[in-house]
Length: 136
Image (cartoon, rainbow, N blue to C red; front, top):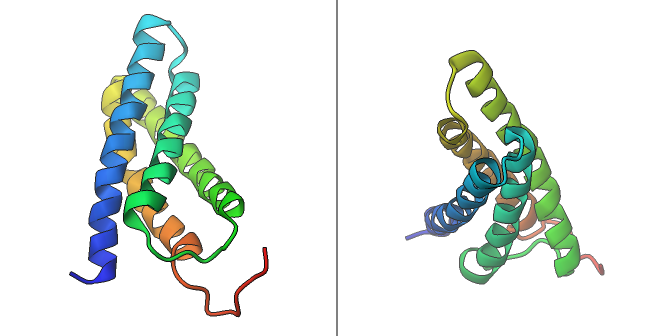
């Protein structure tokens, strides 16, 4: 199997684990602690993103554009923040316009954010740079 399909499948597995953590935290915050849906979705999504980074660099991506792992993590989180905005926006629109419950809306949002995050993270962080190596 070539690198791109292997990475996509690995990232899908990592994302599934991260999604389970995300949804579990979301359900706990909303159903047990009675948090607002969107605040709970943001916290749960960020927790899932941290798990996604740790598992992605351990099991999925073998190449890195940046040498500095702190800078790489910051980029991963920054891309995740865009994914978070997309995720919350999709949840909001699904609940408001389609009348979906929060966990059903979350399932719809997960598909969008998975696709966007994989492409952006892979291209920005996990392919070799065509430029000379940075010193970071």
